Image 1 (spheres, rainbow, N blue to C red):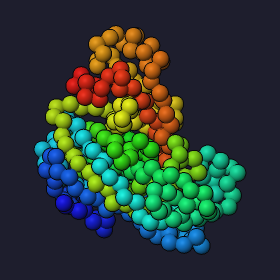
Image 2: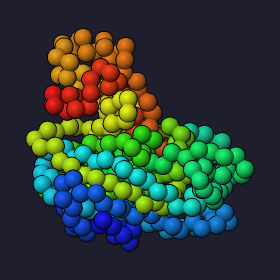
Image 3: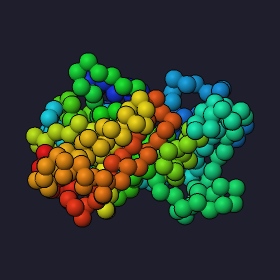
Image 4: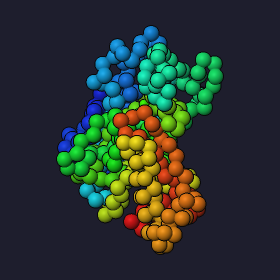
Length: 300
Ligand code: CA
Ligand code: CA
């Protein structure tokens, strides 16, 4: 199995990126990722103010997927996320939902063992997820790896986890996939600024769905197909996620826009992904009992 080393990282998703590896459609491969601090925090004495900020949020890659062309969808099956044995969680003054009250920094190093994260003796069941995962952007567009947008990026979405399938729009030849910033556990919202930040070994399979394009990423779980949309504000993100979800429901179920809008009000769950990145992210979750992911994509 090909393994992409975590020394090969990018900090920007751009239209032109130099691939570090090529994989075939359907190939299973492993990606080694750094934690979001690039491994710079190794003890609880270290606070965020004395690390090199230019190294934050490295994404391993880019990986060229044979056969992926602009106007296709890249389908990424997240087969396994194996977390490192320790993670880092921090609070920093002025950050997060309670930034006004957060005046002191605190760094916690948390042990991860046998499926649990040890929070000072409280055992938290882990659910490893990928914070940053994206592809090369459209022409004349560039996003740093801290920012979530239509190409993916720092979506910090708990459902982008082991067992899920992510669908990203392909903007450039080979898609040019890169990922990093895994978390062992994170609550929806990521409210104080970080999850349990970990290095990880991520096993993926990538396939290409030809001639189908999506504006925003989709993530498929056992019960839902979720539109993952970002905006300057949560309200903007909700509008974008809802708009794409209602369109999918209209086309997939062959109903009018007004019917789909009402149906969305009855069945669509809007969930907050994160509120702490340069853009905010939500997901609009369409139940699969209404429409399978395959039917939804076929109807595009
Ligand atoms: Ca993140
Ligand atoms: Ca993170």
